Amino acid sequence: MNRRSAAEAYEKVPTSIFESSSAAAASLAKEVRELIEARNKEGKPAILGLATGSTPVPFYRELIRLHREEGLSFKNVITFNLDEYYGLGSDHPESYYRFMCDQLFDHIDIPKENIHLPSGTVPGDQVFEHCRQYEEMIDAAGGVDFQILGIGRTGHIGFNEPGSSRESLTRRITLDRITRQDAAADFRGEENVPRFAITMGVGTILRAKQIVLMAWGENKAGVVARAVEGPVTDAVSASFLQDHETARFFIDQAASRELTRIKLPCWWVR
Ligand code: GLP
Image 1 (cartoon, protein in one colour):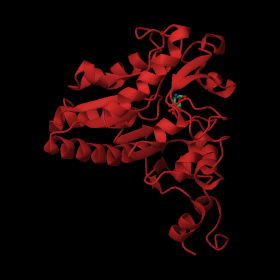
Image 2 (image 1 turned 120 degrees about the horizontal axis):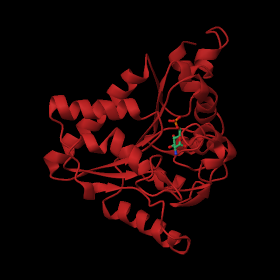
Image 3 (image 1 turned 90 degrees about the vertical axis):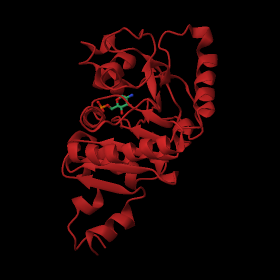
Image 4 (image 1 turned 180 degrees about the vertical axis):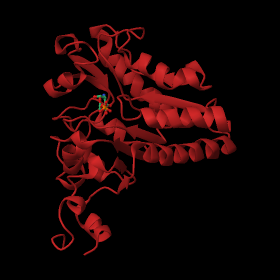
């Protein structure tokens, strides 16, 4: 059995392995560019679902390059981010709002009113209503055309920690210990990492028309293999992507190391 059919036999989500994260980011940016241009021609906005973390940074760099060097305009783009830390204002240096401005929004021509993130400062008694309105805004825009995802070491997408159901919608969630440990360096200590976040749900994410999950580096290899080859389970939220019609994984070589087609020799993969 060659490696392509090994992939088909074991991998339950189409998975592309790229030479490098920048090659993957360039390929993804090209697709997103085509979507934006196609929507422009139809006179309709392109609706993008965006992610934070270090993973999408090369993709955002490439979008900025396309804007600066090749004239790609984002005037007709509407964005919905996956999540925000609960308790952080938009001016907090570690807020996802700040991150998105620094990494993307401040460098392209997207109108401010087209940018949406959950609020990290909505009062506790208004969180439910805020989350309901976030869902409503996504629907009113026509739904997400292209959702970008990273993956946390707990297998989370957005901040859908283990235990999140397939039907879950935008809501406040308690962050997992591993997630808070992973964010500790950014906050100068685990004790400073917020305990809660507001995140789109798995169900919200699965409504997107197209989804690409990106993962780079060896420390994502284990969770990538569980999401791609393992059972669909709420223990690994990303495994729910196996049930989505068009979801794909874009990974680099290091993140592919635990996939059966890479890990086992050809004579074994049969
Ligand atoms: C956070 C974000 C996720 C992201 C994950 C991985 O938990 N909420 O959307 O996928 O971090 O982060 P990184 O890309 O830095 O590995």
